[in-house]
Amino acid sequence: MRPTTRAMTLDDIEDVMAIERVSFPVPWSEGQFRDELRRQGEGRRWMVAEKDGVLVGFGGVAIFGDEAHVMDLAVLPAHRGRGIGRDLLLTLMRQAVAGGATRLTLEVRPANSAARALYASVGFVEAGLRPGYYSDTGEDALILWTPELDASALDAVAAADAAQDLVLAIETSCDESAAAVMRGGTELLSSVVASQVDFHARFGGVVPEIASRKHTEAIVAVVDEALVEAGIGLGDLTSLAVTHGPGLIGALVVGVAYAKGLALATGLPLVGVNHLEGHIFANKLADPGLEPPLIALVVSGGHTALVHVPEWGVYHTLGQTLDDAAGEAFDKVAKLLGLGYPGGPAISRLALEGDPAAIAFPRAMMRSGNYDFSLSGLKTAVITYVEAEKRAGREISNPDLAASFQAAVIDVQVAKAVRAAEEHGVKAFCLAGGVAANAALREGLRDAMSERGIRFSVPGFDLCTDNAAMIAAAAHFRLRRGSFLGLDAEAVAGLRL
Ligand code: KG4
Ligand code: ZN
Image: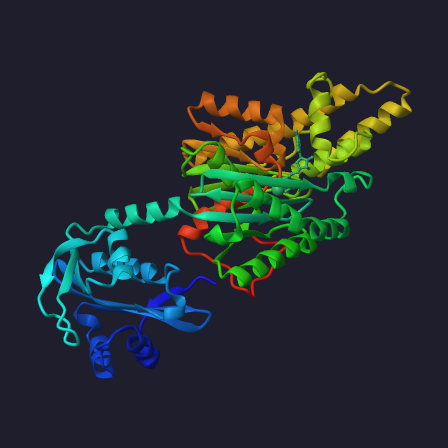
């Protein structure tokens, strides 16, 4: 797992001393560290890095007015070269900025090229020499400094780091086994989706037991293919990501277990992504300029929800379906008409030739005053209609039925989406989830939003249905916020946004 940084306490001193002794010819004494920790109130900030419960590095900074000085920075030899020193240093630099410093200095041995490379990489430049500084050799110290230290300079360093992120994302929440490799949160190097839909089609829907078995069979090959297509090996990755909910529990555990195994074997940090957040982030991939505050309509086989996103990572569910999800309604009506599974694509194709005004199906909850949806009544209305027509010996027009059913679903979704966007005063709206592939829904929302001057985003068709590219995009954002899964993490079927 990725190390975490936290403030140093007196209890850490023994471990800190051990690292200090193997790192420097003239180590600090225990008394010096105790003294430093007593002076936290006088601008001293000491941090440690911990990995799997072991203290692997530490560092400290002293702030004097607008100037700060890096007092010490060391990492256990076996853990060097993995960015731990860099994380510690950047943490100390942020603390110095927060403490009011605008310049930061430090001394380094001229021969210590690894340390000099680290300092240069975060913006330190040479300021001069301190003659005879090192008492063991009489060597001069090189003085380095960052003359214009501020939060935006540190943000620029973080952004440059982020651009180098190479994440492997895994998605197995329902009936697609998917893996994708992405650089810097936007550059998609590969996206592999192995759909199991053919194995479920003959049952008219996803069979959970089959889904988990098929994921188990496919996962190794899918991940391998994603790496090969991206032209990289496991050793090139900087992080791993996996959908840990919501979804079918037996399906989710396959991806989560595999990702945890990879994390254990590679030592890479593992990010857990909410499947619905993934669907929303598919929009960020399709439309990189999309920024909150926004409203998202997430419509898939398992979910129908209107979500207010004041900022990335913060999700307020305004309303959701009280019974069937939108995709589920499409699937059930398709089954009734003998159109096979999944039903959404079949219904939307048929609807192209039908008259949406042919049959007046109910617009449930249209005037409910809240943001909830109900779709099971519509499904029942379709069944009742079909039975009545059959009894009356009348021929049913499947295209008219499909178009009228689809219109009833879409009318309510568009009306509620518009109201949510207006009530929250957002200037952006995005559509996400498998049902976002529905052309009539896309057009209905696009028109309604553009009439009101609201930016409308929707992913391309292959990013609407389940895939791992969207999981990688969401993971990039979570990674920057340092939210990781431990090896004890479990899949959560009912995970909330
Ligand atoms: O997001 P997704 O791939 O899986 C879940 O997370 O549920 O969504 C699958 C759902 C299915 O119910 C499918 O019928 C529906 O999306 N769907 C559509 C269309 N394409 C897929 N629904 C309506 N119109 C479509 N064109
Ligand atoms: Zn989905």
